[in-house]
Image 1: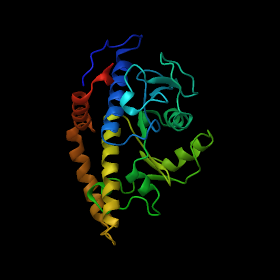
Image 2: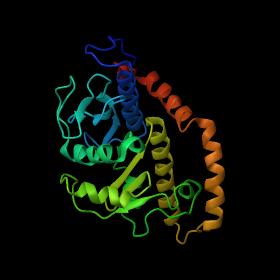
Image 3: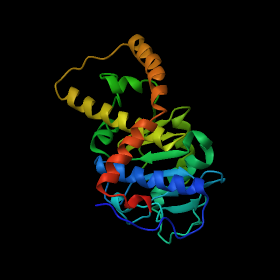
Image 4: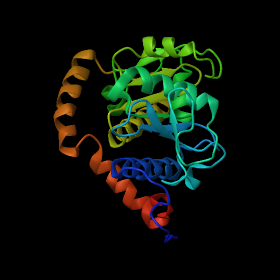
Length: 255
């Protein structure tokens, strides 16, 4: 059911408010798609025009309770510098803060999920294999990081960045993926394609031996895909479509 509320009751720039709305919408989309994980996991976005501050979900709320106003604004040292009085999950802060601090605009938007399909592929000894259309999108474009336990220790951040390399997806082995991009729409569409790749891989491997696509064909696929993706504005069309879908259900994320 749509909700009518005031827009905001605190001061922030128009750019920050737009980022808040897009991030809140992203949480609702993830929840709608079944990508939530109780009150855990995280999506974050850097605050436009500010150094070393980002927005993340309030710890204790489900994804369908996140709104533009209750998102927590913190700096990369963990200080709450916004109007929200909610706390932040330490595991989310440690991981996201390090990426935001050290990767710049390439990691403006970041998500970490525990979906069954992506966790299963992260736990597979071969990781993501080019056995389907979506998996071919990511061949040689993913980093892998060995499991070290829950991500709460700052010193792990350096290893996370090192294992990510120049990629935008880091598969945390036995854990789950971290997906990042310059924009929320770009991160979202990348996460959507990764989820599909993992779902299809699991279904394929359940049948026995899989047909692996050759590197030569993968190269052609990625070349042509990059041309097609420019038509969608790096996920803008996808993201706006899903915003319309969740708004029909409940538009309280906007406020």
